[in-house]
Amino acid sequence: MSATMLLLLVIGALVEFCWALNVTRVVAPPWLAVGGSGDLECQFSLGSETLYSIKWYQGINEIYRYTPGKVRTQQVFHNNFLSVDVNKSSGGKVHVTNVTVGADGAFRCEVSGEAPRFYTDYGVANVRIIALPASGPELRGVQELYVPDDWVQLTCIASETRPAPVLTFSINGKEPRAGWLEPPSTSAGADGLFTTTLRLRFYLREHLIQDAADGAVRVRCTSHVPGLYHESTDVLLHTRAQQARASGHEGRVAAGGRLLTSYFLNFQLVFAALLTNVAQQYHHR
Image 1 (cartoon, rainbow, N blue to C red):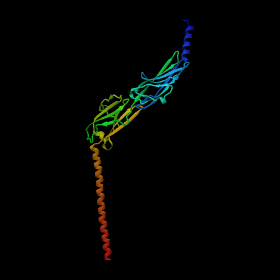
Image 2: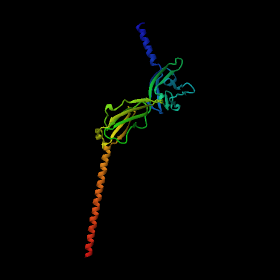
Image 3: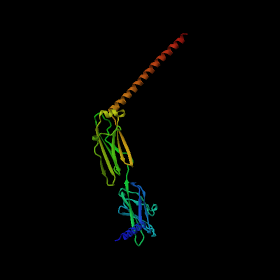
């Protein structure tokens, strides 16, 4: 094959490519919340082709079809993991609602030209389905009262989340020693949501109590999903040192009250005696 012929073939292929149907972009939200909704949009260039159909797939299952040449231009297909709102869908845009975790993954847009070639191109976008808890993590294992050197064992639990969060502990605002933490564990439920637990175990040494405000050691567990969720739960480990401080304060207040009462009674006695003396002097006159 001559160089001229090869050049002509390359030019012909380039012309064919420039005038061919082409999916240029698939626009989709990076994530949708369980039960939520969102728009998927297929952007394309027809080139020299005439549009025959636009099809949307969730995974391998077709969910929506747009065929402008037919009387019924829109078709919606049943899907176990989401619904399609046909009133908010048109052309290359489809509005999905009531999504579940099963919809997590690839959404494909397929655009086809008219006969006789039915030239077809497609594009893909990935959508993560997330579930975020309505409140902070749960802390279990707190006792009513501690004494120095007591064994403390607390469990932080973040339930029904997707993706699984990262759990961290702090004690009086400081990161605990590595040996005080057990490795985190994560389990998946039948609904595709995760439960993550992290356990903190340590001896309540005197220096922790001394570092705490009023002798109550503050333990915090934080649940974090980068860019999506950040919530914390705090508990106070009440100690006898804290109670002793409170009792001492109450004792000082009570003693002060008794002293004030004594001063008041003495004042009343002196004032009464003074009045009696004045009355007697007036009577003798």
